[in-house]
Image 1 (tube, rainbow, N blue to C red):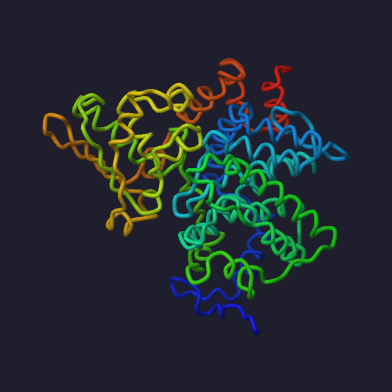
Image 2 (image 1 turned 90 degrees about the vertical axis):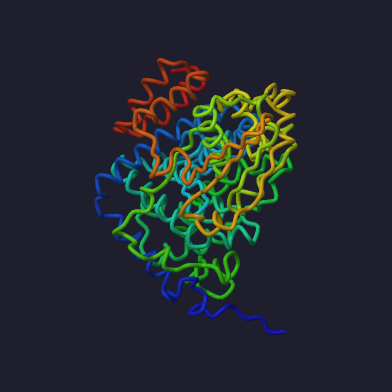
Length: 472
């Protein structure tokens, strides 16, 4: 039987041919090695660095991160050039990336990019920072590499979404390993030939199934860590002479064929590449849960504030949202991950507590009879207009039906933290202090925030580890 790949001049969803796409990405990455960043992009990378550490520090104390740390400690010893695994100490760069990426994603507080339904920072920062430490890179080159990685992940994920999601893949490790490889390649100064090989190797690492949803499967937490680790490995293998298929995006049986066949928009990947930085449109999370839950949470909190309504007043809650989000409708929340993926739990929590933080997702909160009773009265459905707006908007319409007959409705087109509804730099610092203080103390968290905004030296990564291990 003959097996052939897709002819890619017909693949691009918006009409642009995919032919030459890999070459265009490679040329951009190679040129970016020497090209200064726009000031607004450089500042945004620092914003995301603060947010990344706000996720890593508490995440490193979770059970899944401790499990990965035990594995990393016995398998990825520091031989030769080492990097910092936060909460563990010095290990090899791939090992540090694996643990730090897992920690960054362990509490669902990491930033993301809506058009790609992806978390770029939890892959890119672990990969690039670990590789930069191991190579002794300066911070200027490191920030440049971070920007390239973040941009590549964001564009690649958005170009394939939602086709990749319909094919059951988690975009964060899928696009993440390929995009982060671009950033690590900047640090290594790869030429076009070796970069083609690195991307070909990275695409064979790409994956990450969406089967975790509703199944208390903590493997989701390690997806970014695995991708970050494999990005470093892909570059190192290419430097060692291991070859990869090329051009990996458009070749038969390549990235697009495997993950997004028939639904890949080459224009999203390539239009304005190097001129318009889409990473500036990334969002920051105010709540420790899947981003699909944030619109409904914002709507409930707005209704509470406007009408003084509380949980005892509510007989029924209806949530209309886009299809991708509507699948997050589970009502079994014994496990933290399942609660963080559940719109009914998030909505009930917002109604009962108004606050929606780590405490409200804790074990006792997940067993609260008042919350659980309300969870069963939350009904989630897909909405045609919300689907038409997605992923440009993440629309959620929440209707509260009260016992006294009132129907109260709130529509949230963009949840808090999106570029159109942004978090300020001061609020970014406050988030870091709020999440890190229980682990390292408020004074240390405040001092660390200042050091991260400045990012004068990569020593700040090791200092963060020392704070976490109590040896600073």
